[in-house]
Length: 203
Image: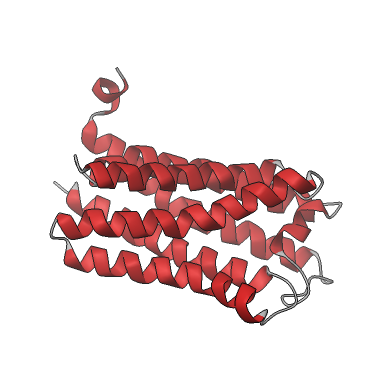
């Protein structure tokens, strides 16, 4: 019924539009939240610390996460699932990525006031994101999309390395920097894939 209403191409373009909007909204809200809270430190805070600050800061930060998570889920379901074709590995990778977006929504909904839940969904998000990219790398490789495969594995590594280094050598006192670097890497991949979807569906 949904497919008949929107049409396959419209569904993919809806997903691609959401994919571009998701990271733009997320980082706009994060940066505005940082600006609104001068005490924030990139080395001494986690980004999620902003989510429990009273006034404008907390609601703005939390909204940015769950709203961008919803947009990211639309990208995964309507854009990525169609873009990946009938590949079983691709569908698994897309499902993992959709799971990551659900965790992003949960980070915004369950802020640091829900300490245990917040920690669990945060860890899940930063684990599922690179794992999904590594799985999708295999799907793109099997589909002979070498450039997309190389790009995906590079982004997966870029998203994972800040966390590996943090746990290995603890290069910053808190996690705002690895969160931002990892998030920016995944955002670049989502935007690039979204433009790829638009190119694929161009009349």
